[in-house]
Length: 545
Image (cartoon, rainbow, N blue to C red; front, top):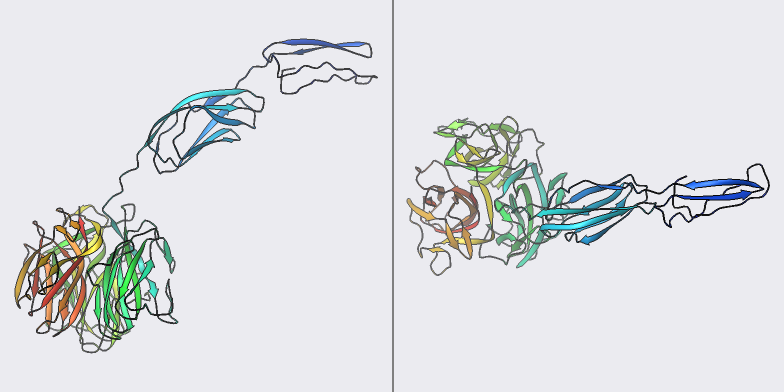
């Protein structure tokens, strides 16, 4: 027999009487061949124990490398041994975050390395027979990959209602009470699932629409959850006005939240159309058009890429193609979503909803309007597989749709390099025309009617930097007390003024609209106003290669 961990070997008298034993302590002097005899009932037996030979070997020969803050797991096998095993480090040390434990086949090295570098250590595995084997290893842990500062856009398959404060209404969050005036509501957003759609934990900014309902009038400001409230406004509204504006807001804090500040008790509805997160599969690049184009015009006698001369029919959704070549500009076949403004005219009271073709019409509104009002609605809408989106209105209306850019998964196309989004850590006031007010650029006088202002966007502003490589900016433009009703147009410097509007306003109004505008080669964009007005421009982020 071979030596083992049995302490005694007993010889019995089979079929006879009496018994006897010869005992060998198998763990003592295991390397020697031993022979002994025993006499049982006058019969002599000879027992030979062959020398015990350890046959355990450890593999693999080398360990694959890992990365800091990334999961790591590697089996260490003990070939030729018998379970159960005991494993340990006999020399050197593992990187912090990794541990060695026994397994049914030897040992397991696993964890999430918390430090980078080259680590040398020796692993020893001992089997059930007390046979040990050891191997020295060198493990290289790479530092974490740089976190991309630029973000891609991920449109949701359909808009979702993140927040509805109104009593009895449905939303991912539905507190059933107004946000108190002069307070901010902290609204968690990243790592949420709403109506079956996920906003992942790594989301860094949101795009959507915010609507005031019952309120005391005033303004509201959206800003990242870890920032102080900035000198900025996302919407200005009258008491109990149902007013909708698009928004882009950065997320911050451990809960991926943003803050909503209101100046009076206000009911709010927040619909989300998409989010920005680090680049990965499914992420989209932004492509600003060389100049905005009029994609749809329903009014008789007016021109557009699609000119129907027929109003949108209330209560019936219609499809609109977006991948077009029009007025010397192309929205290519790779476009997955478009960015622009939808202006309703000649309507009754109601609302407008834009959503991807192929999706069920969502519980969301792109614009709310009253009878006879000219209402401009900034939007981002995903496209269906055929490049179309749906337009739904609750009432008959004329509609003008202007497009200033699109999202696609192509890093380069006919319009140039795709851009990544860079949210500012807090919004900044780029332009202030009112005398005595603060802004990075000040005129201390209203903008003249019919005049064009060239506005620099790049550089340091309010403690933030809009990079020298920026090719588009995102923010809000607020007209203050215009002398007459009119419109405002933004477009990249170097292009001819297009037939589009960034906002429409009435005499004496304080009116805020979200905007995205491309920049010329030197970082300038153009501002045209048809009426003399004060203007405030707040910027929340920029796009760059």
